[in-house]
Length: 235
Ligand code: DC
Image 1: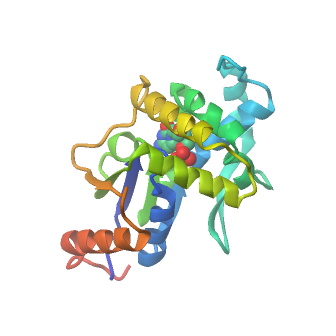
Image 2: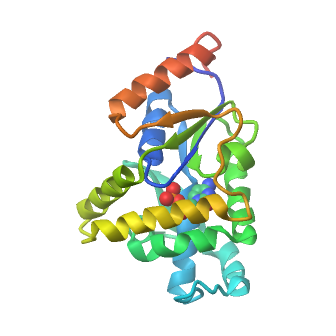
């Protein structure tokens, strides 16, 4: 199906499968996939590796901000799609570790960090034909995005998905720890002062608790066909 040059914003709770869904949408429609959470995770990795966040989540914001411009956080497309790099170093594995997951919400709550990430995303979004997933893409970063999806699912189902993902990467984790982390991140993400997780008024809700990925693809194809199917351009 050909569709016009649009921005597709996919927001929602952690571990709802936003990135897997966004990647498949990008592949199907020939769009570029941008993982905004990976940028927050990259910033968090910098903070963790430089010991700029302590056990009580006190952050040395000044030092962190000074490191960001030179860190060269970016995406590089390789055979697997979008990957996250810091300079020449692939940081995909490190940014998905529990050590980073535990610290990412307090780091993402800093308005200065959000400004840095938003700037990078808006620059990349200028080309259009992008699918971006995150928490505030449709509400704050791209309020004019032509298609906005808000994803949700039961916390236990999300924790199970996250646990399987981590185990498949060789990380041994306990279900209760993962569930606690999911709930804690839900709370911080939705209650922070700067750009909290909120459904944009014009976003379409997708609760995928009992859905397979194929069922989600059927759902999005029909949504996109209904909205944009007759307005496609070959560009
Ligand atoms: O999608 P994810 O789990 O990889 O995101 C990691 C964290 O980054 C998440 O706890 C919330 C934060 N985040 C955010 O605040 N805003 C975004 N647009 C994307 C992620």
